[in-house]
Length: 414
Ligand code: PMP
Image (cartoon, rainbow, N blue to C red; front, side, top):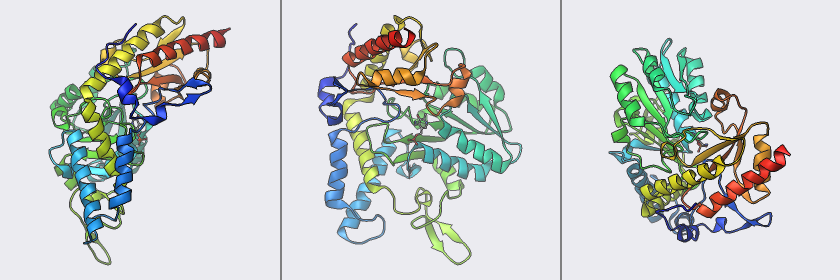
């Protein structure tokens, strides 16, 4: 089976030297992209250039390097704002990643808007990063967590969501794309449903959305969107929270320190303008530069082409793996309804053993609950083996995966 790809994968792979290596005597097949993606030379060079020429602390000095660093940092904010089609760069708050972005919004919106008896709606599809911060808020505020369930084929149960929405709903926080099932959620339709039935703040965990799909936060109609650079060819330790400006202004700060204040006196302080109010201390300037370079790189290739390529790889993988006896793939049956995430289950075997046997063939996948314990619980499992694709994966690698799974199955069930 041949993939009709929109991408020149061989040319793309030349930008990623890390992919060109031998593991256990076999060429590396990296299929752990949902956990973290690799970085092209262009991103690594942008970070090096910044440190070799321009580094200083931002927003503080009047000297040339401070000016250059501040310009690089703020231009990166503008670049990343464009990535999600934000109306205004001031609506982008730099964070350490999706987890910190979701903790920030849970803490601050929680303080501003959530009290005893209020309801926070999540789903059984959550990554723990979009679950534990809300549990902490519920414990602090006396609010109640409600959960949208999942259908057998890995979709959110939208009828149930509709029934949960009402005058007590303060927050609805859901994933754009599931890291454990691959499901792409109908976030625009969900936004319209929330607006028609409640005044809730609508938050999206975009960790698996922003790297793979063209995101337009204004068209989706959400209030916050959280994402990480390291899953979109950027560095670790940096990510962003997009939020509507009026809400960001209403929210209290998340952390205190330098740069987030307007005026400090002995007993109290006033806050800097949004977004600086949320950015205490010296930020990850080189990370911001790297995230912007990653956005440039991916845009140069084209997100629609990347998504089409991933869908084609997913279709091929699902076709080949369907021929393996006793193997199940969780999530939607159609490649069009999912991102390039394939959670595999061979009943009667351990997910960890399958990943270990694949590793011995040079194939990197992830086994476990993928920080989404409610998902594996929902399907009566404790773990899955997850393969996940990105722009640099080839058709040949999908065939290696299918061959590897066949070999592993024979070994495990013999
Ligand atoms: N949400 C989802 C859906 C994810 O896949 C991840 C990363 N595995 C996160 C949140 C957390 O992202 P980070 O570790 O970059 O903070």
